Image (cartoon, rainbow, N blue to C red; front, side):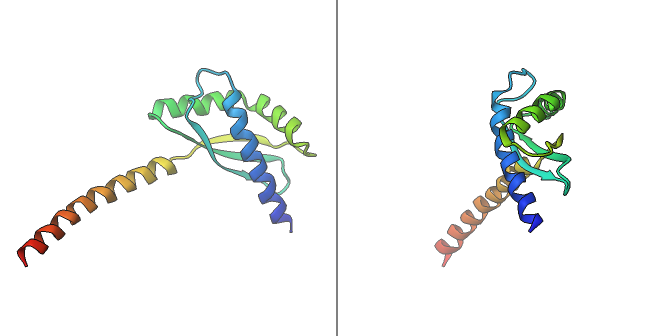
Length: 126
């Protein structure tokens, strides 16, 4: 049953963190930043937030650095919004999964284009 609570709290923290990031005024934080996941330890003392940024690598590095600098503010705001006994200490990591998925999609679509042309040639030859 404790795993269900950890999952529910992780989702609530993810939702609040996403809305809080949109409110931050730091110019280093990219406006196309999303929270892809939050992992909280069993004792609710530490949380690792996975951040995805649409843009180049430098923009992603700047965004993660800005979030690391604002970690204290983020912790205080999350604590006020969620009313938890322990507000976790946040660490932020860059998540490349969305970019990787877009790359895979691009590769598959380029393979599909070649497949359509071959299918059309084979149907006209027969």
